[in-house]
Image (cartoon, rainbow, N blue to C red; front, side):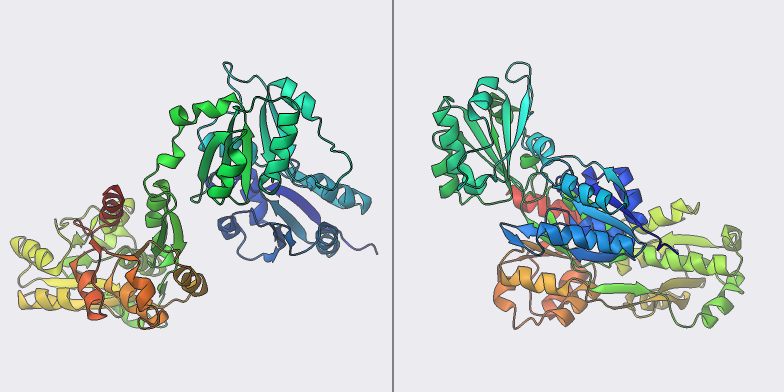
Length: 507
């Protein structure tokens, strides 16, 4: 019986910004058994294939993890095992991506394959740098050229005279190491020494930077600026438009690295807001949220909800896990018909409203004193209050409500534990001095951060980093560990946290 062959997808990962990845690429990744990925493929894309075997075969500056022939064979071997294989390549597979060579070998082996094009960096990186590759006042054509020719070759395969005569915008891939050779060949072919040139480093990513020069000066300028791969070389009159059309490199946090210590389940909103401002976000969740081992008490409480007058939610997780308990008990919003509901903070309020529950009370400030004062005005004294929350949390709110005369019951519906995801990446970034801000969104994130990172071993590195607190309670916890927060949000929300970072950069 003939062995079942798998299928291979040659997928373009795009230029670096994961938001430029295609919908078809995402669909293919979601069904992959094996993903073979490159140095230029953004690792954020691997979130779409959590169960797949992931094999890194990156090629960086001539350092090949695997030579091309062995990469081809690896793909073939995995497909012959009957697996769905995704070959994830930076940019587009067929634009200087050697995808054609890989496809030819698949055809020889009789292996079914598809190509999923990606946005090439030649277009995207230029657009993010404020350079349109064509413009009717400057260039009616564009040429994509390898800058990686072997300088020892007896004769170049590139027709330099034709390139100069074409008056096209010229985009060279992988050419920084050969920049002086490229420049010399263009000058020898008669190109204007004052022709505008741009080097775009890590285009479309948070690490993007652009050097603008002239053809006869760019080699020296690139050397002084220490420009390195991966960088595109763009040559043509369209480069003059950069000061006019620049948009991406004006983002206030571009090039700044911000560490997010929030639990991964809640980090997406903060991460997205920081990335929108251009930041490089290093996720290092110090908290992992998980269900309790035993919900017997919780289920018994749900059977007597009529004994309570108020339901107070202090977090999005409290809402999420409480609602799951309701569903598991075959209950819905009608079970809350006799209860008034309070939400501490806009995110918690939003989570409730998505479920069709509009809170009766949302405090203007998100600290226990303001919550208690507001609830007292609403007649909380003598009333039964149920607080679904984490197994271990600050006791200030239930204690203050009890002092105010309420009958308070705390109901654990989830627990938080120490997470060590990406700890090694954080340690390396701190050691290399590549961190600008570390954000703390709760006292728990502070405590767990210093459970992961020894404060004495990293005291010097942390002095060079701005520690950002979401509010006074979190700041107080930082101070207990011997660190004064450099920035504190004036409104104790994710938006407030982002805004205080943005203002600090502005200053």
